[in-house]
Image (cartoon, rainbow, N blue to C red; front, side, top):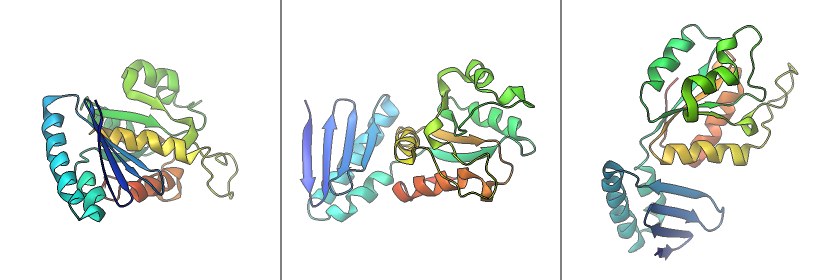
Length: 198
Protein backbone atom coordinates (compact mmCIF):
# COMPACT_ATOMS: atom_id res chain seq x y z
CA UNK A 1 0.00 0.00 0.00
CA UNK A 2 1.30 3.46 -0.93
CA UNK A 3 0.39 6.57 1.09
CA UNK A 4 0.92 10.06 -0.27
CA UNK A 5 1.34 13.52 1.22
CA UNK A 6 1.17 16.71 -0.83
CA UNK A 7 1.99 20.34 -0.15
CA UNK A 8 2.92 23.13 -2.53
CA UNK A 9 5.13 21.74 -5.30
CA UNK A 10 6.08 18.60 -3.37
CA UNK A 11 4.54 15.14 -3.28
CA UNK A 12 5.88 12.38 -1.02
CA UNK A 13 4.90 8.76 -1.63
CA UNK A 14 5.62 6.25 1.15
CA UNK A 15 5.71 2.51 0.41
CA UNK A 16 7.00 -0.66 2.11
CA UNK A 17 10.50 -0.12 0.76
CA UNK A 18 10.87 3.56 1.60
CA UNK A 19 9.72 6.92 0.32
CA UNK A 20 10.01 9.05 -2.81
CA UNK A 21 9.79 12.84 -2.79
CA UNK A 22 8.83 14.41 -6.11
CA UNK A 23 9.06 18.06 -7.11
CA UNK A 24 5.97 18.71 -9.23
CA UNK A 25 7.46 21.44 -11.40
CA UNK A 26 10.85 19.96 -12.30
CA UNK A 27 9.89 16.30 -11.90
CA UNK A 28 13.07 15.73 -9.86
CA UNK A 29 12.85 12.63 -7.66
CA UNK A 30 14.62 11.88 -4.38
CA UNK A 31 14.49 8.34 -3.03
CA UNK A 32 15.09 7.03 0.50
CA UNK A 33 15.11 3.24 0.78
CA UNK A 34 14.94 1.14 3.94
CA UNK A 35 16.57 -2.23 3.21
CA UNK A 36 18.07 -2.67 6.70
CA UNK A 37 17.26 -1.86 10.31
CA UNK A 38 19.73 1.02 10.27
CA UNK A 39 18.18 2.74 7.27
CA UNK A 40 14.71 1.90 8.52
CA UNK A 41 15.44 3.97 11.62
CA UNK A 42 16.79 6.68 9.38
CA UNK A 43 13.67 6.51 7.23
CA UNK A 44 11.41 6.94 10.26
CA UNK A 45 13.35 10.07 11.16
CA UNK A 46 12.92 11.32 7.61
CA UNK A 47 9.18 10.59 7.73
CA UNK A 48 8.86 12.72 10.84
CA UNK A 49 10.82 15.56 9.26
CA UNK A 50 8.68 15.45 6.15
CA UNK A 51 5.39 15.27 8.05
CA UNK A 52 6.37 18.29 10.13
CA UNK A 53 7.29 20.17 6.98
CA UNK A 54 3.94 19.27 5.43
CA UNK A 55 2.10 20.93 8.31
CA UNK A 56 2.88 24.34 6.85
CA UNK A 57 6.56 24.47 6.10
CA UNK A 58 6.59 22.56 2.82
CA UNK A 59 9.51 24.61 1.54
CA UNK A 60 11.63 22.83 4.13
CA UNK A 61 10.49 19.41 2.97
CA UNK A 62 13.26 18.91 0.46
CA UNK A 63 15.89 20.09 2.92
CA UNK A 64 14.65 17.56 5.48
CA UNK A 65 15.29 14.77 3.01
CA UNK A 66 18.70 16.04 2.01
CA UNK A 67 19.73 15.76 5.65
CA UNK A 68 19.29 11.99 5.32
CA UNK A 69 21.94 11.56 2.65
CA UNK A 70 24.99 9.81 4.09
CA UNK A 71 26.81 8.74 0.91
CA UNK A 72 29.92 10.64 -0.21
CA UNK A 73 31.20 11.43 -3.69
CA UNK A 74 34.87 10.74 -4.46
CA UNK A 75 36.15 11.98 -7.86
CA UNK A 76 39.23 9.92 -8.83
CA UNK A 77 41.46 10.16 -11.89
CA UNK A 78 43.51 7.00 -12.27
CA UNK A 79 46.44 8.89 -13.84
CA UNK A 80 47.00 10.54 -10.46
CA UNK A 81 49.63 9.06 -8.19
CA UNK A 82 48.24 6.56 -5.69
CA UNK A 83 44.86 6.24 -7.46
CA UNK A 84 44.75 2.45 -7.24
CA UNK A 85 45.56 2.46 -3.53
CA UNK A 86 42.89 5.08 -2.91
CA UNK A 87 40.24 3.12 -4.80
CA UNK A 88 41.17 -0.09 -2.96
CA UNK A 89 40.88 1.67 0.38
CA UNK A 90 37.53 3.27 -0.43
CA UNK A 91 36.10 0.05 -1.87
CA UNK A 92 36.93 -1.79 1.36
CA UNK A 93 33.65 -0.24 2.52
CA UNK A 94 31.11 -2.54 0.89
CA UNK A 95 28.56 0.27 0.61
CA UNK A 96 30.84 2.07 -1.86
CA UNK A 97 30.36 1.80 -5.63
CA UNK A 98 32.88 2.49 -8.39
CA UNK A 99 31.16 4.46 -11.12
CA UNK A 100 33.16 4.63 -14.35
CA UNK A 101 32.33 7.87 -16.19
CA UNK A 102 34.52 7.23 -19.25
CA UNK A 103 32.88 7.16 -22.65
CA UNK A 104 35.22 4.29 -23.57
CA UNK A 105 36.24 2.35 -20.42
CA UNK A 106 39.54 1.04 -21.75
CA UNK A 107 43.23 1.81 -21.21
CA UNK A 108 45.89 0.52 -23.57
CA UNK A 109 48.72 1.30 -21.17
CA UNK A 110 47.05 0.54 -17.82
CA UNK A 111 45.07 -2.70 -18.23
CA UNK A 112 44.08 -2.77 -14.55
CA UNK A 113 41.70 0.10 -15.38
CA UNK A 114 39.95 -1.67 -18.25
CA UNK A 115 36.26 -2.37 -17.81
CA UNK A 116 36.71 -6.15 -17.78
CA UNK A 117 39.39 -5.99 -15.08
CA UNK A 118 37.28 -3.65 -12.93
CA UNK A 119 34.20 -5.85 -13.33
CA UNK A 120 36.17 -8.91 -12.30
CA UNK A 121 37.63 -7.11 -9.30
CA UNK A 122 34.50 -5.39 -7.97
CA UNK A 123 31.54 -7.29 -9.44
CA UNK A 124 28.17 -5.55 -9.15
CA UNK A 125 29.74 -2.62 -7.31
CA UNK A 126 31.41 -1.53 -10.55
CA UNK A 127 29.09 0.47 -12.79
CA UNK A 128 30.01 1.80 -16.23
CA UNK A 129 27.83 4.85 -16.80
CA UNK A 130 28.64 5.65 -20.42
CA UNK A 131 25.98 8.36 -20.49
CA UNK A 132 28.27 10.49 -18.33
CA UNK A 133 31.16 10.17 -20.77
CA UNK A 134 32.63 13.25 -22.43
CA UNK A 135 31.78 13.06 -26.13
CA UNK A 136 34.70 15.40 -26.90
CA UNK A 137 37.34 13.55 -24.88
CA UNK A 138 39.46 13.01 -28.01
CA UNK A 139 39.12 16.61 -29.17
CA UNK A 140 41.43 18.83 -27.11
CA UNK A 141 40.18 22.39 -26.96
CA UNK A 142 36.55 21.42 -27.49
CA UNK A 143 34.11 22.01 -24.61
CA UNK A 144 33.08 19.17 -22.33
CA UNK A 145 29.82 17.61 -23.51
CA UNK A 146 28.28 14.70 -21.61
CA UNK A 147 26.50 12.07 -23.68
CA UNK A 148 23.26 12.00 -21.67
CA UNK A 149 23.72 13.91 -18.40
CA UNK A 150 20.12 13.77 -17.15
CA UNK A 151 19.96 9.97 -17.22
CA UNK A 152 23.54 9.50 -16.07
CA UNK A 153 23.33 11.87 -13.11
CA UNK A 154 20.22 10.03 -11.92
CA UNK A 155 22.36 6.90 -11.40
CA UNK A 156 24.69 8.74 -9.01
CA UNK A 157 21.87 10.51 -7.17
CA UNK A 158 20.00 7.26 -6.58
CA UNK A 159 23.11 5.56 -5.16
CA UNK A 160 23.80 8.49 -2.84
CA UNK A 161 20.19 8.48 -1.65
CA UNK A 162 20.59 4.81 -0.74
CA UNK A 163 23.50 5.75 1.56
CA UNK A 164 25.98 4.44 -1.01
CA UNK A 165 29.21 6.34 -1.49
CA UNK A 166 30.33 6.75 -5.10
CA UNK A 167 33.83 6.82 -6.57
CA UNK A 168 33.55 8.83 -9.79
CA UNK A 169 36.24 7.43 -12.07
CA UNK A 170 37.98 8.86 -15.12
CA UNK A 171 41.56 8.79 -16.40
CA UNK A 172 42.39 12.48 -16.07
CA UNK A 173 44.94 13.51 -13.48
CA UNK A 174 43.69 17.11 -13.21
CA UNK A 175 40.23 17.30 -11.63
CA UNK A 176 39.73 20.96 -12.52
CA UNK A 177 39.86 20.31 -16.27
CA UNK A 178 38.25 16.85 -16.23
CA UNK A 179 34.60 16.19 -16.99
CA UNK A 180 34.36 14.73 -13.47
CA UNK A 181 34.17 18.34 -12.30
CA UNK A 182 31.18 18.94 -14.58
CA UNK A 183 29.47 15.80 -13.27
CA UNK A 184 30.04 16.76 -9.65
CA UNK A 185 28.62 20.24 -10.28
CA UNK A 186 25.46 18.67 -11.73
CA UNK A 187 25.08 16.31 -8.76
CA UNK A 188 25.49 19.21 -6.35
CA UNK A 189 22.70 21.16 -8.06
CA UNK A 190 20.37 18.28 -7.13
CA UNK A 191 21.94 17.34 -3.78
CA UNK A 192 23.60 20.53 -2.46
CA UNK A 193 24.52 18.91 0.85
CA UNK A 194 26.34 15.90 -0.55
CA UNK A 195 29.93 15.70 0.66
CA UNK A 196 32.47 15.76 -2.17
CA UNK A 197 35.91 14.46 -1.15
CA UNK A 198 38.73 15.34 -3.55
